[in-house]
Amino acid sequence: MKLIVGLGNPGREYERTRHNVGFDIIDEFAQKNGFNQFKDKFQGMITEKTINGEKVILLKPQTYMNLSGNSVVQVVKFYKIDPVDELVVVYDDMDLPLGKTRVKINGSAGGHNGIKSIISHLGSNFIRVKCGIGKAKNKDENINFVLSKFTKEESELVDPMFLSIKFLLEDVIKDTEIDKIMQKYNKK
Image 1: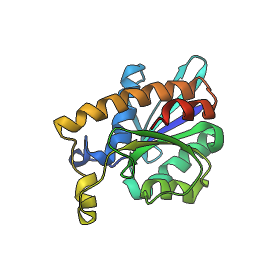
Image 2: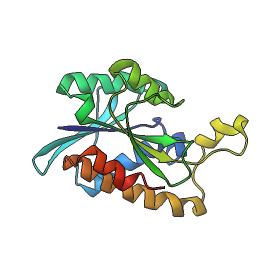
Image 3: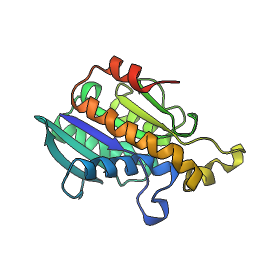
Image 4: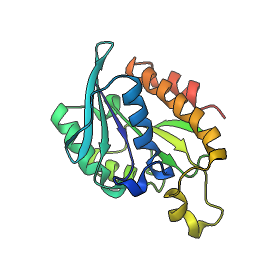
């Protein structure tokens, strides 16, 4: 079983913003793989499907970013998911250059409030897929920056990242060793 969580904020005003890349990737992955419509459950939007004999659950917490762990922990407990081997969280990362991907296990939240919330409920040992969204030119603009949409030019870097992450998630579902996944997708 795999639980793949995309982090973001609910509401039309947040759609397709940098902070919602987790939601957007999960939506595209669900569409590409023929998942049923998402249902409102566990303080999130959830859908599931069996892929190559593996039960795959997709979750988009609807608690707003800072409380993402509240939704994730409910699903983990209900389905008896082992976070170490079965939980994957996809989210935005300002410290990564635009369009870059980084797979990581364990560690701190790195200033990301959604990850901080999940860690507070489940500990830090789970797979993270960081999506590079770039950085604001001025630190004071960070909030507006993460809540802004990608420009057309930026989309040329973001679209390949989305495609790469969809392949990465397929590798996770196939139970590819995490070290091999990190070698393959953590390219400079």
